[in-house]
Image (cartoon, rainbow, N blue to C red; front, side):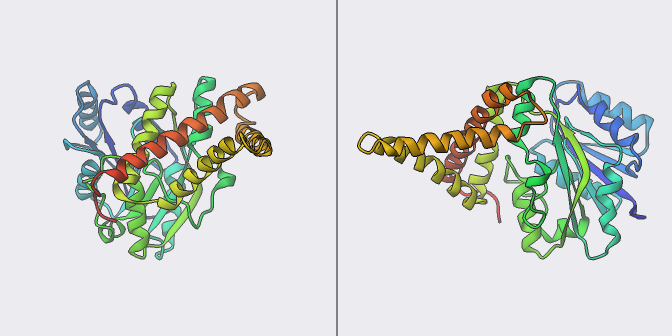
Length: 312
């Protein structure tokens, strides 16, 4: 366990229904934060009232009112933090009891600047479970050398935040990816803590699922990051379209397309083998993967067609 004190930061907006669960999971953990700084981005429900009640009852909780996007709130929270080690998670999530203990443990090595934790989707319905399979990689799919941390589960030294220039306040969507890339570009050393786990709830319907991932793609397009990912994604669907069209003249192309589609369905549904019954996995996961890909691609294209936002 890191002997150094840790500040936990989180941004919120209209999280009246979930904020107490998050705070309870943090304070009941094996290693509670020494301080929690919460930046409210302009809640119109009772979130701020609940937060001020928690702050009045516990001096470890500090509440800031920071109208603006999540980058504005995170930067304000970090500037207000009393400690040099900063841990970050998202509103609407809950941390495992050992999360903070495990995500700060690698800082015992003074050369480590950033620790990427992991996150596990949880769902009550078959749709939510399928959405979680599509939205988040399994631990076995992670390459620690390339894995970029999400603000759901990350910790860093304040100096790493300074070297990266903070979170880019020009970005409203998917801002944690450019932030992580700038820390890498600044020479920060990353570590991966696969057992530092945050639980989060995927979207519960197709419309909100599509909108969420379209926003992520829009953020990547606006900031011009991850172009290789979108290039590969577009190439996959372009090849499928070419095979479909070619099949009108060369029927064997349809055979190749059918084989590729079958492989896609099987590979995607296998990812859900421990979370969903077989028929639900076959029906839901491949279909949601297509929605996911379409949302990301359309969002990225829209972002690229607009002016470049932020700095990378």
